[in-house]
Length: 590
Ligand code: ASP
Image (cartoon, rainbow, N blue to C red; front, side):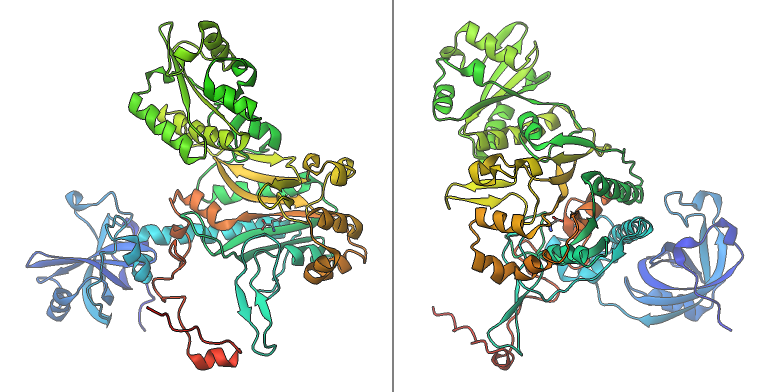
């Protein structure tokens, strides 16, 4: 009877003397003439195999001499304790090696385009083209072992709390997250199209109407957006919905599974998460996804900047804009070059420019010094709480670009000053978002979240009279400057839903055409309900310490939406198009 297969990476000193049978990939060969070593790798890790002409059958040694990287081999042999000086403390199997008695090739490999090691200098394009080789690298495998553990723990927490995992359709109709849809033509119903779901939003609400009370799904979502390093066309959400909830019920479920998910990576997460109202987040940090690992807060310099002779301040304030500042403790030592970079960063975020003021050994220096009197400068510095040795960064502009610029400057300055403790994960809930934003270009209101988010009851009367002041029962969960997820308590009354649609400029016929099934469902006893969705890919990337979502997605697309391995998207034969009633594209001219 043949020996059972032994995982290579599990062999330890206690296994010395055992006969074992291994199957795996040749990671390296080292040929010393009389002695020959193969490192053999499988999913469990690596172990060293020793071929010794004096002790091993010659055909096994001869074959080992022909072994090449990534050949698949089967080896039998005896586990030996390595001599003292030959142990490798860096490898879990480093105390032992296997003295081979047999070697068979199960498959041969061509020379791989890059070596299968954690540290690689292969370009990302090459790694994506040969993804199966890239995924053989132990560090990549580790990301997926972690991802599996995270997903498993999240499922366990939610299952234990009574959430039902329910699958919702991939072929559906346009959903309301506001991104572009991926469309799928219907063959049977010529001229009609399915859309891939941007999220299961409407289905989960309808599951609440169905009386399921607690739903969740690790749901694949599709959004045809311009891709950036941290986006993919398709991604996975931890999507959940609860009936008869308070905000606290949602927060409690999410905090419980996030603690578990990060624990899978050995990261401790403190509960309860801090809560921060949207207005406060914007005022203090200039953003609704603040990095709270460091304490720097913005200051409002409107009053101090009023009536000064400094033209950019006067221009911003008279145009209804703002002057906001950031005190950088100990920042007076910042070099000119760094200040220029910070000014550039402010511009990248849409601000007209950046004014800096340094205070060092009682001396104030600033490019704005000539235009400001000593008293005016003092007023600014004290409004920002600047002390000796500090730097003040100030931006005068319309509120949006000014805050965006200062939010970015806050992070850059904190990094520069070494204030970011990379070992910490500081979570918070951002609450009390406005329900609506105003689109200057289109001249209309749009939902800050999506059109099914409930206004606060007490703000409902403002919906028609002062829409900008209506607060939503919406919330985001944020960690270290990343938005992990967002959700809300929903509208569960058809009349309120209709009113919100009207405010958003969705006419009655349009509302019926797009969301009639939801409006109908709301008429048949819809319970109050609410939920949230969190990005699983992002959670895995943060937990794994990965720089890109592509490191935790097995077969991701490039930033231009291409799968370099399968070459999707691709043309299809004209006959396939004809069956769908679609005209082939006209050949490109010129
Ligand atoms: N469906 C929403 C989204 O994908 C999340 C939610 O409101 O639950 O952003």
